[in-house]
Amino acid sequence: MCGGPAVTVVRYAKLRLCREHFIEFIQGRVLRCIERYGLIEGGWRVLVAVSGGKDSVTLLHILSVISRRLGFNVLALHLDLGIPDYSRKAREVVESFCRGLEVPLIVVDLKELLGVGLPELVVRGRRPACSLCGLLKRYLINVVGVEARANVVVLGHHLDDLLTYVMKNFLLQKLNEISKLGPKTESEGPLIGRVRPLYEISEGETSLYVSIQGLPVVDTVCPYKVVGSIEGEVRKFLDSIEGRNPGIKIALARGIAKNIEFYRVRSESNVGACRYCGMPTSDDVCAFCKFTEKVLGSPMGPVVRGKIKEVLNRQQL
Image 1 (cartoon, one colour):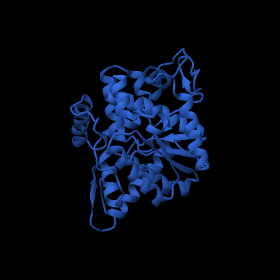
Image 2 (cartoon, rainbow, N blue to C red; image 1 turned 45 degrees about the vertical axis):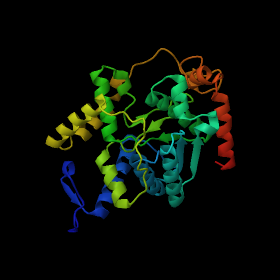
Image 3 (cartoon, one colour; image 1 turned 90 degrees about the vertical axis):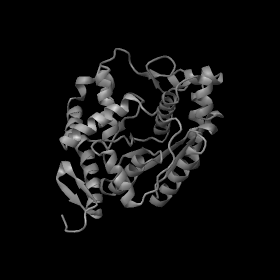
Image 4 (cartoon, rainbow, N blue to C red; image 1 turned 135 degrees about the horizontal axis):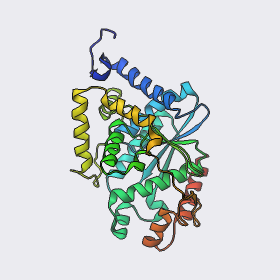
């Protein structure tokens, strides 16, 4: 494009890009994704979940740039799950990064909320770590979103992650789960909508973006990360097809987005409110309150909501 030395070849776009044009290219594609799928609007209060990994760091950096153009407000959220060493390093990275960007950061510490971290809850609950981690994150992110009066929650799921789970759920014929893997999940009652601006950005592109920009990321792997899963095999399959047919992943992602309603199963049960904490649930009691009542002796939803309100009030958010 400019005659300068290329740092990468974008095969699906038939481009060789220098550092400056690669940054411009990725930021432009995220902006177009936001506009194409109607993910964020001007004047919105946007809550960005930031783990400290390359994907969420890339996302927050790009949104901090785009927000000035589209006129929305960015809040960052980091969940400290109390995993020894890993959580400490991740929190330090996110706190430093947000200070540099001048983005308000909300830190939710699981030990401060419940008195125990994820490792203790895994042992007491006798539940797989990743499954429990997902339950906790979903609940806490939604509570913060509600209490912070966010219009939408932004997640750092990229193209490779999303398509891997699309294919896995298709193989297992869990078609309704595919409906949750598009560029956005609409709000439902008190449940705040989720959007994924990295929907058409690959993992390799987030890695290069972080490297070129010199952005801080946590360099420790989560000790609960599963190795040798079906997701790994599916990803290899998709990478192989992409290698022979550049652009097929993006075409598949756009096809899924276009036909997302096809996979949605209409439920006859309405989303109501948990009788303990008031958060959305299709049952009388939400999954978080059920789990904490079983493991800790009482449903902790009301306590958690109260403590998160205190955090937001202290930060005047």
